[in-house]
Amino acid sequence: FVYPITANLVIRAPDNLFRPYASIGSGAYGWESRIKTSSNGGQLVSSGWNFGWITGIGVEYYLRPWVAFDVGVRYHLTNVPGAKAGIAGEKLRFITLWAGHYLRF
Image (cartoon, rainbow, N blue to C red; front, side):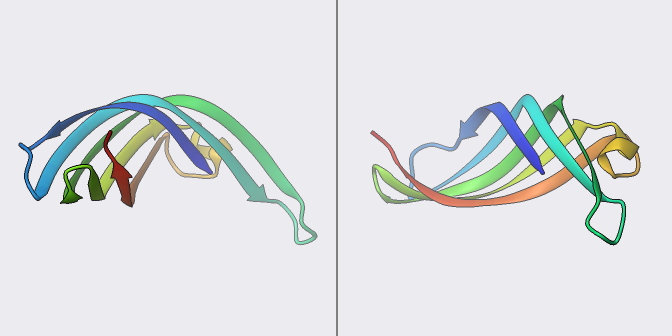
């Protein structure tokens, strides 16, 4: 499991029906690794926190001036203790697809 807690700076295009944006941020990335050690259900569990980075792009579609759908792609990068986390190398990189909606007040 990976659970990022980040703060982001977002640059948006001017108000319009479709509004593209780009973001960059950083913060704490918590992780937990479970490595299966035996066929009877035994596992090695380890966890930790590291500093990480996030960048992203997306587009907002405004149905009304205060209601929008948001679709975006985010790229995450953080350091983890490779073998302890069950991965090769010391960098954990992954991409997420975000989709949702929100209300502006």
